[in-house]
Image 1: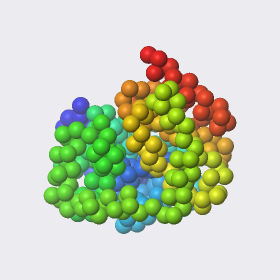
Image 2: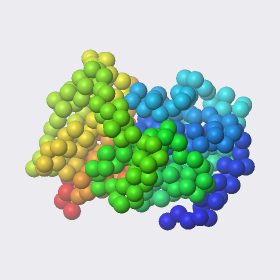
Image 3: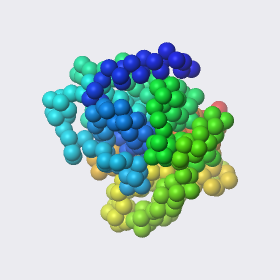
Image 4: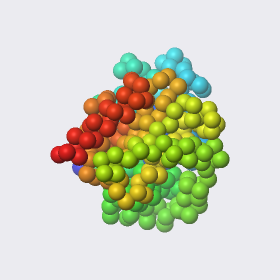
Amino acid sequence: MLNDTHFQKSVDLINESNNILITTHARPDGDACGSMAAIAEALKADNKTIETLLLSETPQWYEFLFAKKPAVLNQDITIDQLRRNQPDLIIILDTNSENQLPGLADYLKQNKKSVLVIDHHVTFDGLGDVELIDASAAAVGLIIYDLFKFAGWRITPQIADALFTAVATDTGWFCFANTDARTFRISTELIDAGANPAALYHTLYQNYSPQRFKLRTVMLESLQLYFDDRYAEQQLTKANFEQTGAKYSDTENLIDSCRIISSVEVAALFVELPDDKIRCSLRSSGTVDVCKIARKFGGGGHRQAAGAFLHDTLTNAKQLIKDQIEKQFQR
């Protein structure tokens, strides 16, 4: 568990720094974006010079969180530019794994400046000089909230919205098994601070583009059930994106659509990427530890939500994951 010593080291590192770069994993989700937006606003208010950096584009439905749209690596800024204008401190949120930081991992190895990692995953590579790691936290936003309280940083309504987004999205709007009393307690305090759950829910879940809705329909048409309907397999090919006009970021949370089937205990979504790798997202009701499966293929995550990239054909990738799921069911 984290204690005051951990938080004090983090605050000391931030106080000693003037130019701070804040980043997170590729394909940032609500927890990553909300946490990044919240801590960026707090440090700006403390007169720090802040640069927010994403490794892939911000999903459209999270753009409202940021006063200024984060820069995207190799689109708005290059690694060479980062090397020339090195920040005093790099803060990495919602990951501690090199394979989730494509394009940035090598830079971090060569970086001579301090790194602060704030994360809640069980998989880690020890990237930080100081690390705030709490695997019991349902979202990294909860750890950020504790950091705010320890540091005495003001939680404005804008920051409250960002942190509420972080917590609510990583708990499936408080439906996932990781939702606990701590989650509800802090969420209540964020509402007291100005978060607007109804408006946030509409923005996040009732705001699909026609293209994204078509993509969801195509994905559901690919649904296959195995092992007495306990395992749901779904896929999206490159052709599906071309046909629907959807973006790759539009796949976020689509995997959960099939989990309304009462028999489904494990779900997988396989996405064929432009570079021919296969991204596999996994969800579990708890009977299967999908993090163990993801780690076999260089990925990671949590027991009930994980993912990995497979360097194989779509057909082979599906079979590899199916075999691993069958082994866990047999146990």
